[in-house]
Image 1 (cartoon, rainbow, N blue to C red):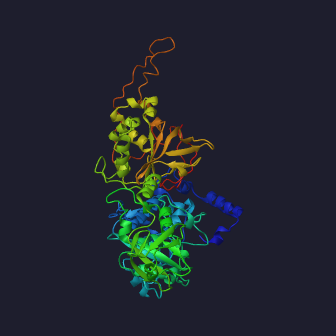
Image 2: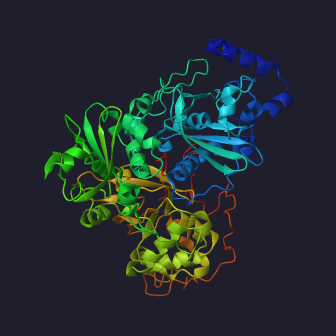
Length: 628
């Protein structure tokens, strides 16, 4: 439908509809009437932009397909894999709501942006995701696409925008651009799926996806944000070189040409904000070797101080020495002692004898850059000590890596570590019994969750401590327990007043915070202890009440409430058995559909929540009613 058609006056349009309905036959009218409650397979979507038929993957774009994720390594510590996993987990559930289906044996390329998908406003999240998906083509070797006139600009992304590869001219580092964005890496996920990481994001810069400044927004993993470069999405526009800093930076060129020994420093420096100013002045830079950084890396599990980006950048600052004339190694050898002020505000002391050192750390080698600035390779990272790391660890326990557990649930590391931590605490005998009986590991696999944990007193005041193991293991029991989990790590700063989050059980929790007090409410419960970090896997919050308790309320014995009536006699109700009722089933691997309601519907007994498109990664949602 063209825009001109949409400009027909409303009165004329209504008159045409009335005339049409007056002449239509009853049978036709009945056939045209919408169903009272269509299922998901009959849901229609608004008409979208016309896909250019000349695109070689036009049919795949129109067929709304997603790639199979076989081979996706979710437990990889490598940052590239983590970026791919976060991009998929944050964005694919939204596309599934728009009837996108996973399909095998179709070539596919993911363009992984270097921003947090959670910063994208919900109305434009679908458009953002499609801008970074290329169905029907696996760009294993994009150089051939860029060099072939026949192949060039013949594939489009999910929005129908053409994909353009260009090699940056006069680049010494083989720099490639994808729609104007530098290609950082490519990962082969499986036979039919490739991921290409870019230094930025694709889309219309004139109408950004988020009202927030994407460059300044820290994501939930506290990763340092990249330096955003101008983006070009118009395939007909001239793609200008945008990596000016890579060409103009002698230090980055030097690091890129170093085959070994300085890759860790190069990695941290490229992710920092120092590259903007480091070549504007004369300086001497002290570069710790890779082994120097490796010293602080845990062997199997533990805390790596350089996983804290703010700390890492402060350390880097103290390795740059702004000087009117860079210091040469020959100068150091001829001096007994020289003190130099660092860019970070501390002092370093050079000694020339018996061997050149800085802060008693050996200078291993030296290089003079093309712009005259000086590089010293040193054997240790300066200003990092056991005491500093220990203090930093106490402040950032959420970044500690965990040991790999083979029990209780090998595929559910967050759940396993949470269980073992709660098992050691006498306040949580009931919830650990619950976790032991309810088979929820398939629903809480991997990591990156928030767990709202009721204390024993919450079970006792409702009589839930008398529930049988069979009830806890039932479908209702599983449903209630899963309503205490939220997908995505929530920090205390995320729990803002009136924010609403979707639970893994399909319900919703609303946060209540009273200004000027320490009270934080979660539905009917109050948080008694906040931010109990389960390594870097997720977070727990302790509660004084059970969420969605109405799901199992009818299984509680009423003997204590109906033991006697006003006349002192028995109420006639007697004790109610908590043995397994006939309608309680052992939980299947996946929940069955509950569209027809039921007395344990997760959204409450009377009214359902209004359906809306949400992202499940701990994003706030809007609802109209919460369970009483």
